[in-house]
Length: 52
Image (cartoon, rainbow, N blue to C red):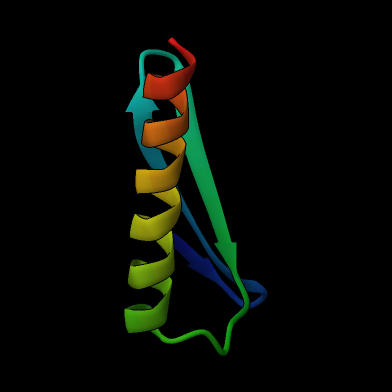
């Protein structure tokens, strides 16, 4: 995770060469950021599993 004056960026490995990059505004709480990132990661992993 990287944090700067314009917000946060976090990169998650998904599957093979696929990465999920999540951006958040500076006023986003870490709790909300983690919840949304985990939801997005689960949805992306499910979509990739279904596609294969």
